[in-house]
Image (cartoon, rainbow, N blue to C red; front, side, top):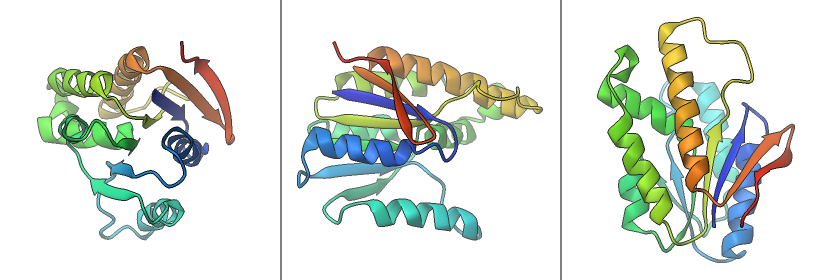
Length: 177
């Protein structure tokens, strides 16, 4: 089953996703954690956030830091996987493709959606939900919000289950059929 977990900052979405992948794979089953966040160099607050995530992971989980989700998902579609998070991936992709000023990310998004759709093991994707606050004041912020909204919609279409986490509480958006 493929699950998309949406939520705002500090909503509890990552913790819920960690529990979901464990339920889907089994308590002692191997889990691959694909981390998309940037390096923590020079940012103690970011390092603390990353450290909190790392401390929660069971010792038998394998962490892969990546910005190339489609390739990493395709390389091992039979191992339960948690991706945290799609917003970090999109940021790195927009940086790599110079999309902050208008270049297209469509080929990268297409490749990601194909990789998610083809994934055969339990897969849990964490992504920030957009559109629940003010419209970003900058052009780059609006581009990011627009692109992330589109990515979330495309991923939701190929996932079996979609959950929105608010204040640590999961709300089912799409039930598995």
